[in-house]
Amino acid sequence: MGSRDFASIRGREGLVHCRWLVVAAGLAVGTHAASAQMYDVPVLQNAFVNPGTTLGANYARGDRAQVLGAAAAWVPSNGVLQISGGVAWFNPDTGSSHATPGARVMAPIRRLGSRTLGVAIFAGVGGMRLGNRATETRIPVGASVGYRRALSVNRGISAYVAPFLSISRVKQDTVGVTHVLFRVSIGVDAAVLPGLGLTLGFEGGANARAGMPGPGGSLLGVGISYALRRQR
Image 1 (tube, rainbow, N blue to C red):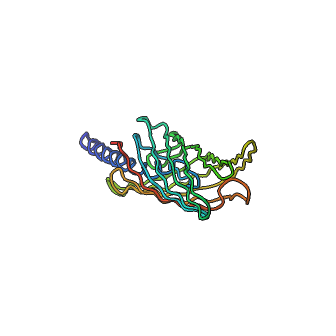
Image 2 (image 1 turned 60 degrees about the vertical axis):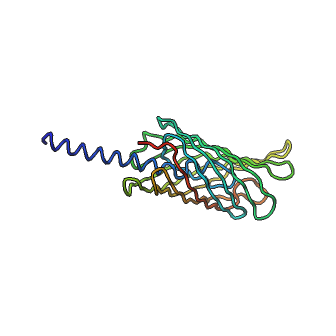
Image 3 (image 1 turned 90 degrees about the vertical axis):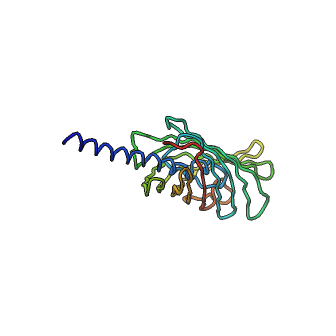
């Protein structure tokens, strides 16, 4: 192979690599900020990260309430982890509305991933004050597997699945009850413009019985995110 042919191949590799950097930044903003860990918001977690700061907003709907929230995510330049946090407004079909804060940490497992396949682990915490001086805390702990594909220089799509344990605890005064459920979320992120991402996701699995803490049914969520500083 001549030097000219080798240079041509290296040039094409460089273009493909740059293309993936741009699209990866867009795919990383889909749920990273919008899914911090608010009460009754689907645990949507992609396996890819975008170094920098991302802002997001999300809407979720379950069997008994709707939730509207805002969040932010931060990833260091080396991309070893992602920290996200936010607050939402929980509006039940019956009863009074409440604010619900939450946070989550995600870490990619790079030795198991590639340019198109991502694997990550995550854990979060969120909660809400209930009536009668009671509070409920939810802690999801699980893993995420994601696949991404570039559609053009600035657009791409990513799909992922995240099985996790949902650890829920209700405490009233000095009495507490803990309940563990196995849940699974499925999501799709789409980079529609440079730095702008859209998300659609679903969470289902085991449901909490009447009188026990934890998700009582399936959850559907949509989100929009914007990366303030994109990877180049």
